[in-house]
Every structure is written in structure tokens, then in C-alpha cells.
Length: 135
Length: 135
Length: 135
Length: 135
Image (tube, rainbow over all chains, first blue to last red; front, side):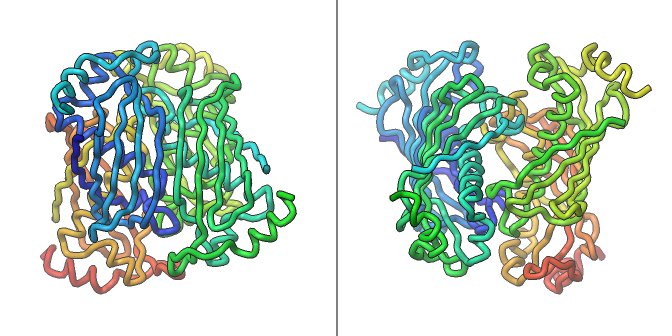
């Protein structure tokens, strides 16, 4: 299992009239967290797209426990529990400054050709990357 | 089962560099669709909050089939399959202009007191509203 | 002078903890309004990009008079006061349901080649479009 | 003149189909930058609102020079050139990783009572804060 930590501070414009971080913005936090995780592992998502590979989202789930508020510094813990095959799944836990569980979520991505949009197999770069990480 | 239709056109700023509607924006489409459905049923979400009730999201799930694109006019079909109890669940199907299935999703809300943020029982207004709709 | 009307209802997720439509979202409303105006004039922005032309924003200004609120149905009046040359300027007035002035703004776009990102002259399609509209 | 630096990395979901950071998102970057600046100066925007003061935006302007791209680490330089009176103006310069000028902008805020929404004079906390900073 691989694990990565990302800190994100809640922006004013990301809150809603309930005064909470709007639930639609968690997708952006997950995304920032998994981009950072991939960067730490040695692949930049920017590079991946330069290779002609896009990674559209197939599924997303989210469960909300405690509201997050403006200006709070959240910690997103991102997990990769299995090497990517046809699908590539990320799991998240979000904690607030008091270490309370704010949210859990998952994002499942697939690989596709950026020109045709058609699904493709796991690119070699990802096979290499995870080759020795789950043994 | 109750059913409602909402049309939403994809905005330019809602797309991402893959040229698709960004997956994080579906939450806003679901939200617009269920606001419209409640309005059609006779309760405005705005009024609900004026009664001191907020409806935070407890869970959200989303499955993406076909990408939606800029300027496409999507149809969101919203379903309420059971009257609200402690939880209030909405289900969605999103179709594109060719009637292809773009996305399915669910949002589960709870009722809370807008001052304390604590969960409350189903407000009377909702009990009345759904009283004779699922018999 | 050309004029177009667009109705947009404020989404919950577009408000912020002040309970107002967040100022950053007006850019999306302007964008939706000018897309609609171009569609009415006979060019779809989607088509323009298919011709290899993009229209990045060069300047934007906004002035806020009265806050817009969740669920309000706003009217965006969009003006083109001059045919596009190197720059293409749109002006906006936003009114609420009581016909009060909520916001005024401007967006100035340029034309660029979608492959190189370099500025280009006004595409012929726009010259034709506005040829007889300002005489 | 006061000056502050903020680093923000462009999120995937903040880009649009042109592959650039969407122009509507700069408002959020400005906002994050001025929140950080106020925090450095000793006032948290969160605290301000707890005192019953809100700071709605009166005017915003933006000029776009070079597109910002996904994953770029931008530097926002924020300036306060005068102490707040009825209006409180922030100016911004945004640079990319190659130190090229991406964007300049301004935001002018006013002070208002959070209950009534009516304009109020500069709160004492801001008078104190800037008392000796512009002499």
C-alpha cells in the first residue's frame, strides 16, 4: 500500500451559504492530492498527457462526516492499495486541524488515448513505476 | 417514485484540458436538478433554509460513461424513490443530445439545524409534501 | 449595437459563506451569456474551435452593486458595441428578479490559433457575421 | 507599500478545453493570496467575520498576458499600496515558473455588517493594523 499526504487550505470561494466547504469541491482536492502523489512517485500527470495518455474518471464516491470550514488547513491522505490494471483506484481520507475525520472518498480512473478517447491498457510507464512497490 | 427533468448546457469554464466536462462539476448539476425538483414539488430550498433547516450532503456517488462536452445540452433525470426519513436520497441519470447515457449518480442528504449544525428529524414540511406521493 | 438576453439561476454551490453569489462566478455567467449571444447570431463557439480558432480572454472587469442570492433568476444583458477587430469586446449588465442592477462587466477577447496559441486576425466567419450589423 | 508572496499550483479541474487555467479562476487565486497576506499581517479573515464584518468585493479587474497551465506553480505577488478607508484595494501580479508575467489584477473590497449587509466604516482592527505601516 502506498500513502501520500497533501495539505490544502479551504478557499473562501469554495465555501457555500451553509458556511461549509461545498461538497462539489472535494473532487478538486482529491485531484490535487493524487497529482501530488504521482509527482512524488516520479510521474507528472502533465508528462502523462504529453505521452498522449489521458486518465478520465470512471467512478467517484464521497462520504462526508464533519463539515470543513473556510481557512482550515486540511490534510488529505491518499492511498494506492493495488497497482493499476485496467482501472486505477485512489482512496482518500481528509482530516481537519483537530485531526477529526472530515471526509473519505475514492476515485477510479481508466487510461485512454488522448486523440481517440478510447480506453487503452496500462501504459508501460505505470507498469514500471509500480513494478516493485507491491511485492 | 417521483421523477423530474432538468436541462443544463455545459459551460466552457466547466470543461477541463481533456476537453470534457470536469467530473467535479457533476455535483453542481445534481444540485441544480434536485433544487428544481423540490421547487416543482412545491418547496423552495431557499424557503427551507429560511425555516432554519439546512440539508448537508452525507454521501455522493457518481459513475461516468461517456464524456460530456462544451455546449452540449444535457438532460438530468432526477428520481426520488422513497420519502425522506433520516436520510433523503436523490438519484440521477444524465443523457446527452443523442440520448446516450453520460452519467449516473446519487446524493444522500440529511436534515440539520442551521444554527447548531446538528441533525434533526424530517421537517414537517417534507412529511406533508411526501405524505400521499408514495402510497 | 447588438444586444442579447440570458437567464441564469444562481446555484447553491456558486454562493459563498457570505450567502452571496461568489464574485468569481460572474466570469462563468458572462461566458454563458456571450456563448448564447454568438449562437443566436449564427456562430457556435464550439464550431469556432473546430475551425482551429480559440478566443482567449485578454481583459475582464467587473463591478458589483447588489449581491445576488441563491436561487435568484438573473438576467444577463450582453452588448456588442463594435464589430470585432483585433479585440472583441462584450459588455454585460446583470439584473435580479426585482430589476435591480446587480453587476456590470466587460470581457475583451482576442483570436488565436488553437495549435500555436499565437494571435491571429479576425477570422473571416466573424467578418461576415458582423459585416452588415453595424452600418 | 506592503507586499506578500503566495504560491499556487494550477489544478487540473481549473483548466478549460483551451488547456489553460480558466480566466474565472483567477478570482480564487487573488482571494487566496489576500487571505494569506492578511494572515501574515496578523488578521485572519475568519476572525473578521466572527466580529460581524464581511468584506464584499466592489470591483475586480484582470489582465491576461500569458496562459497559465496545469501543474504550473504560480507566484502571486499581492500589494497593498494604501491603508484601507471606505475601500480596501489589493493589487496582484502573477508570475509563472519562468518568471514570466501571466496576469495582473486588482480587487477592491468594502466593509459591511454581516447581519444587515450595509456598508460600515473601516473596522478599528484594520485601523490599528495599518496605523504605522504607511508612514
